[in-house]
Amino acid sequence: MRMKENISTLIFDVNETLLDLQPLKDSINNSLQDLNAANVWFAQLLHYSLVESITGTYHDFSGIAAAVLKMNAQKHNLDFSQDEIKKILSPIQSLHPYPEVKEGLKQLKDSGYEMVAFSNGKPEVLKNQLEFSKLDHYFDHILSVEAVKKYKPHPDTYRYAIKQAGGEIETSMMVAAHGWDIAGANRAGLQTAFIQREGKFIFPLAAEPDIIAADIKMLASELS
Image (cartoon, rainbow, N blue to C red):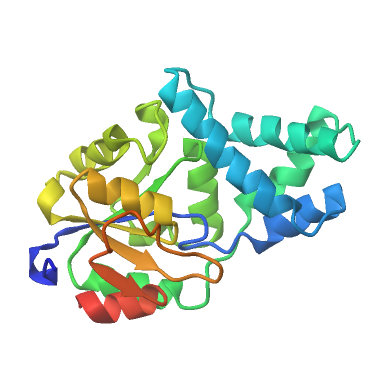
C-alpha cells in the first residue's frame, strides 16, 4: 500500500462524493412515477457518456443527461418537452454537501494538499454547484472533462487533471464514491481513496483502493 507521505495532489469527484444527489433523484423519480427511475437514469447517463468517448464523439454531460431522461420517459409512456426536462434536471445545480464534507475539506486544505474538484459535468454547471454548496473556496482548481472531450474513466481525463494541477501521477490521489472512477484512476496510475457512500461499492475486478473511508472527514483523518 502506498503511503500518505507520497501524496501531494487530491482530485475529488463531485456528485455523490461531495454533493448529495437526493434532490435530483427525487425530481426524476417523481416525474417518471418510479422510485427506481433515477438509479436507472444515472447508470444510463454513465453508459452513454462512455459511448461518446469510445466512438470519438462528444456531447456535453448536460446534453447526454437530457437525452437519457427523454429515453427513459418514453419507456414510461411519457413525453416531456425540452423545458420540462430542463426543469426536472434543474436540482443538479443546487445540491447540498454531505454533512461532514466542509470540515473534511478544510482539514485537508489546511494540511497543504493541492485540492482539485474534477467532474464529468459542464464547466458552468460545476461552477454553479460548488458556489451554491459553498465548497468552491476549498479548491485550487475546478476542472471539467470538457477540455479533454472525453469522460472519466478514460485515462486521458485523469492525466489532464494532474497536468492542470501541476502534479505528478505517482503523487496524486483520486477521491471518489464510484467504483468505476476508482478503477479508472488506479489504472491510469493514480493512488485512490474510495468513499463509502450508501449503496456504493468497489468494483471487484479492480485493484483495491489505497484508502477506504466512510466519508471525507475520515479521509482527512487518514491523510492529515
